[in-house]
Amino acid sequence: MKKTILAMLAAVSLGAPAFADDSKITKGYGTMDAMGCMILRECTDEVEQVFSLLDISSQYPNTDEFTFIADEFNRMLTALNAVGVKVFLAPEKYFPYGHRGVYHTVSNNFFLNRRYMSRPGALMSVMRHEGWHAAQDCMAGTIDNSMIAIILPEEDVPPIWREMVKRTYPANAVPWEAEATWAGKSEKMTQDALESCARGSMWTDYEPTPLTREWLEENNYLPHIEYEYDPYFFYYPQVHSHLHYHPKTDRIHAHYHKHGYGHRHHRVGKKHKAYKFHHSH
Image (tube, rainbow, N blue to C red; front, side):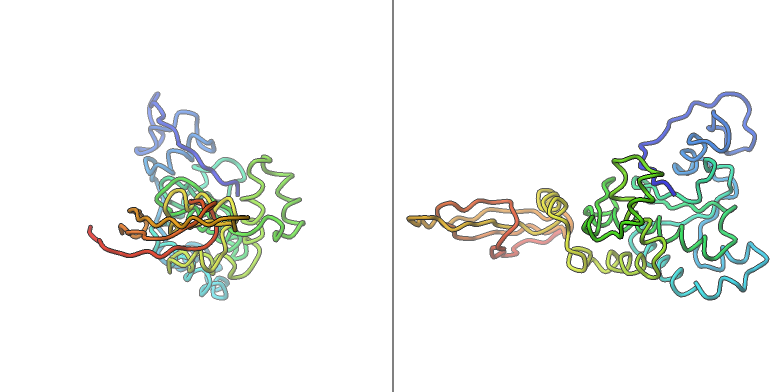
């Protein structure tokens, strides 16, 4: 379902609540207001954390029909939990009409609409789709920020999914939603991306797009990279060192390197040597 990236809602309570912990919902159930209250964990009536597939399947009379999705579902859930994402099953009243699930990049919580989860195929479609958004969150540096980045080159997404998304999402959301929709219909595609995130190997398992790589370098998620081009004439070697902090690994590196005329910093290209000299918490 539609990805909601919201810095959401400080709703003012008006009137008596319908349920004890839903008092901050001012625009009624089935609204973005209600979903925002759930996402912020201020409305928790019948919102239950999911620890295994059984927590979902046991709530429906067709429990046995979920068996064939157990391995993929539980592996996705394990990877999500490993990186700090919690998954919840929530009542329909907290979702706008037609919304089957939502992942929130700020709280890193993931909510499934109980009304639609009785069919294993629907459950896996939503779990893979929203799980892919969590993986996009990971690609953008860490789930601890509020950024997301596409994981695959846009041209790799089959045209059928891009065209489908263009009809249902705003134009500025298409790159992210197209690959998430593809992942939602592809067995183990999201599982692989989430497990890559949990291993800390996202940027080696999936080559960042040029713009994503540039952003990761500028924000120190990837090691400092040198870009160099050959001079047409003359060569003036320069040797210097500087300090560089990598917040992802909490390490300060001393970089000692040589470069000649025409060499620049902070672009994609040859790595220079890094000498670790400090590590503390």
